[in-house]
Image 1: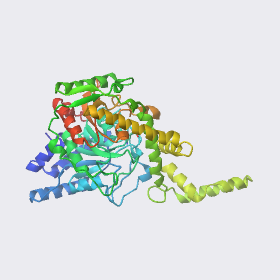
Image 2: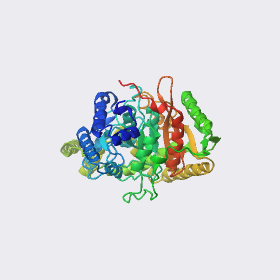
Image 3: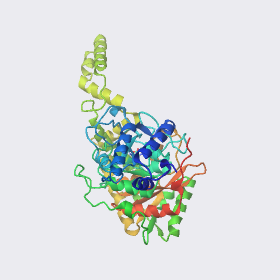
Image 4: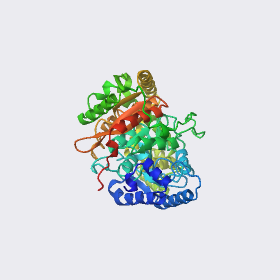
Length: 513
Ligand code: GLN
């Protein structure tokens, strides 16, 4: 087996035993990217030179018997929404096309301290808004299982990179499903930790009360390993929680005794693809065969989740994205062209004798804001800013934003009740396998409805994971969604690993094209 076929845990074992060098491992993933990413488009940038330099450094230190970090020599790709000092961090937006942050996100700093080999930055929906990665300002990403289809989103680049064996580990972010949904559609493992488990410092904000960073990998064990490095309290993020990080990787192999699985009848309602339903029901039967008890639980307010999410997330986005004004950082419109434009408009209005209209023209400052934002943001981002600004405006705030917050609380209470009865809630991660590129791009509502199973996790602030649980007849991956109570990541991972041990879906890799 070549390094690209191995899991992160297997690679680490061979690196530690000296069977493989970090340099050889990095080189084989870089070669793979070189050969296959033209067709897939998972990466926005590949950092071959710095990756090989880091790998050589790890090799040297290992050989000399010096201490090395937890991920020493393992290639990791990072979604382009996480700041890395001095390196482009674009959020797949024209707004940040030339942005080089002066500092590392905490998770990037932790990866560096763990001696991971950072190989590149993965594509995403612009500012993580979307579910197909088609909203990237730079390129679409294609699903490695079928190049005519989307990889899911917004961490579609990360999921496709793992699925196509271009990186053994990736870091993504999940505001309403953006790790779990693409993981499901690409046949890999993706996990959203509890809100507060991983520091958001240096994560470019989309919706701050929902955003979380998490791992994508081939196996639950690999996800556990990466989460262990990412997780933990950070004084730089006041919403990160000061709780010890359990040794996930060490414990992930321990089965859970007396496991109680909850199934939500509404998850299997109208709109769920029949093949997805069959695969998920079979996965639940696997738990039964392992001795788990399966019982129905009710999440009565989940039917409002998509509506609630698409009020709260755009509200927070409209506020967070106000900072892109062409003054502080990021794109600024061509101010000379702008001044000429204003001058021409003024002259035309004066010529037509309408001096009042000429007075009403934007000030140069306001025109600079307008042009900068019009040029810098894509259509979906503008749609969210408008939705959010509207819902937060005087007169609508109570009816939309405040109402949504109240429903959010009820959604959380439903989960609190459910988790008194069960340890994990199992269901589909997405209502259907990956759709075709372009299929939903002109229908934002259809795109939003595809999120119905994942947005609840973020609204409730709990944790969830997607694990491969089958394929459609046409060969598209299907994901099983498991959710657990806040800070029960260990239980979630151990429960997911129990299923994975009984099945081999996670071992399937798409044919190299
Ligand atoms: N698809 C959802 C959205 O468009 C979730 C995005 C995310 O989790 N970043 O908002």
